[in-house]
Image 1 (cartoon, rainbow, N blue to C red):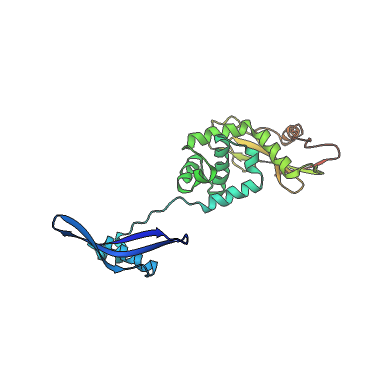
Image 2: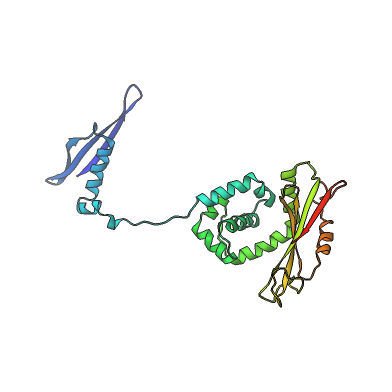
Amino acid sequence: MHVARASWPSANGKVYESIYLRESYRDGDRVRKRNIANLTHCDPAEVAAIELALQFKGKLAALGSVDTIQLRQGPSIGAVWTLHETARRQGINRALGSGFPAQLAQWQVIARVLDQGSRLSAARLAQVHAACDVLGIRRGFDENDLYANLTWLSEHQQQIEDRLFTARRRQRKPGLFLYDVTSGYLEGEANAYGDYGYNRDGKKGKKQIVIGLLCDEQGEPVSTEVFRGNTQDTKTFAARRTWKPAPFGCAPRNTRVAMSWW
């Protein structure tokens, strides 16, 4: 027994459909079919229920049991899509550019917002969230790709910062820049910038790095740079004065720079 459908066009251009509950039977050596009921005028939901019942006619009890239902959690898309759209509106995607390294850099930004973890955790996070689908990444990646991507970001830092600065400021030159430094101590020894200096964390006997942050008058970050741990604050400021974002210098004539040491 099964549900059969037949359709045909009419002279007025419409297509009509007939639905029958039909069974097959043997008449000698021939297999014949006969209609048991005309379901054409039944509600589509009723026809679907009959088809489902016929599909499970040998185990109708399974239709009412949730034990046979298997649930599987798919990749989460909401958080990644929201952050990706926010980055697009802020010009971050355009500043990073296109290509696989730029896509990985986008994910590094999004993963940092979703979870404050390592490169390994960011790679694992991409398996839970629909990172590749939203960002258009066509190949897999692991933590080694993300570590290599940090080198790519370092090599393109100046260009990326210039693009972000220009996209947000257009041709409006800031009248004031804000600059500050901080430091972070290191537990290990193998760090190219690690050295002993004035430790703001109060961790004696620990190497550290010094970080300088340059912002505009609204407090929006413009540029950041890491210095050796023994670099004096004033020397980091001297390095900032040589930074020149396109299309105009960061400290043009009549521009003031306010400094505050953490």
